[in-house]
Amino acid sequence: MLRSIISTAARRQFAASAPKTLRAAAFSTTSAARDQPSLHTLSEDEQMMKDTVARFAREEMDESEQMDPAVIKGLFETGLMGVETPAELGGAEASFLSAILVIEELAKIDPSVSVLCDVHNTLVNTVFRTFASDHLKTKYLPQLAEEKLGCFCLSEAGSGSDAFALQTRAELKGDHYVLNGSKMWITNSGEADVFLVFATVDPSLGYKGITCFVVDRDMGVKIAKKEKKLGIRSSSTCQLAFDDVVVPKENVLGEVGKGYKIAIEILNEGRIGIAAQMVGLAQGAFDHAMPYLFQRKQFNSFIGDFQAMQHQYAQIAVDIEAARLLTYNAARLKEEGKPFVKEAAMAKLYASQVAERASSKAVEWLGGVGFTREFPVEKFYRDCKIGAIYEGTSNIQLQTIAKFLRKEYSE
Image 1 (spheres, rainbow, N blue to C red):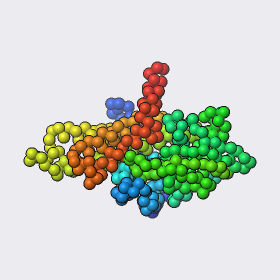
Image 2: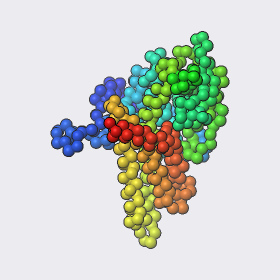
Image 3: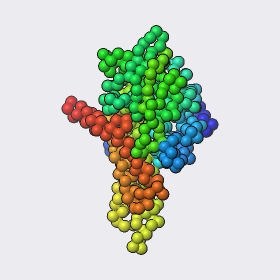
């Protein structure tokens, strides 16, 4: 759909002329400063990405805890699974902010679909685009843009926040490596065909032995267990087993021993995606709850007209907007090649906090019906909690922010 609407030339023109993030000096009166766009100013391509996603909703997926294959197929058919991938490799060749907008809009409808798209775009595709050899890019990026789902396999039972304590081994034997070990909490793994697996080639080297491998499902990846979760239930989260899985040497992604560098860099970017998911979730809960406040009456007044209620939903609206602007700002900084790690951590931390507040208040505003499955706000409430956990816990975000602040103020 996107490829039929956006010509290759238009995408390339956009890539060359995308508006810069507004970073004008305070109180500047120059025409350049006055011409800076707001963070809500979107290019035509970005707006179209934002408008494309509204039809991906399947209420029954939460009940069955299964992602509808038709939804995944639809994401590929509309070009949402290769947002930043170059056009010559089958992608939409759009901006990073376009990917963030897609993630946000999907989360307004179903955060499970949003995180599927998020991990595929901001982690898997980006790792290939940034670190893979030309051979691996040419082989895998078209598949990942058009038909095959990817997943990012880093976490293990003993390596969560301490990701580099992983134990999965990769032993070199001639022209191939043999992988042995297990992974936990792997998003998309139930449906994925392409697995980015982090394993150590030599435990004695510590984090400098960690290497990233491209593993196809048919090489012998086993789904050991699918987790039953509080929220984002239709997003598959599985334990994986690698038992003597043979991987060609050419499937080393990046350099041997540089997997830690890939993981660090990509998770910093991925946190902006999770922030976008949480912003969309918060907005979705808010959008579902607000009309009810002006439909239900108590004491001959709409409940939304009581001052105590007005103060609550006004504050949540401010919180959501603040989280959105933090997220967009981090995305624009990343696009411009400027430092963004602190801003990404701030965006993820705050957006996850806002998602919890907004979805909790939405349940309360609806009263008794908010506690039932008649309205989707209870699902948003269940789905929000993961935002404080995956791709770096809230404590890890605070630690990251504090590290940068100390550096700024101690030098």
